[in-house]
Length: 166
Image 1 (spheres, rainbow, N blue to C red):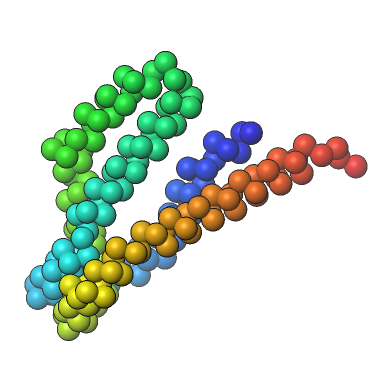
Image 2: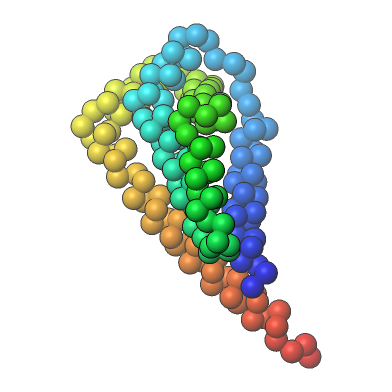
């Protein structure tokens, strides 16, 4: 059972492990034209909408977690959570700004202005909008499979650890 508490920390470590090689390969800063093209791309991709969806998902997960752990505190926790994650909260506005900056810098450093413009054109097309609309579904399917994989692994490890030693 103690392994179940590792779900979130384990996921964070995996993400950190994936991010470390990217951080080590930071190219030089992009020129203003590439930055402008990257900003247009992030806007076309609905970056703001995705960041807000991440906050909403976090809020829901934290509320469910509290409801499961300490039901008596869930209502107060949820009310405070709403306040802390309100769109005009400095924590949220700071996060939103950071996410936009990170995305713009990432794309500007890795794509040429021409590539960014081509991707933006696609993202603004009917096919691009459909792609954007359907991408969360594949993300959800992968997340569900990952959670199943983790649960199966944890169950196996717990059973193996509890088995009598020979």
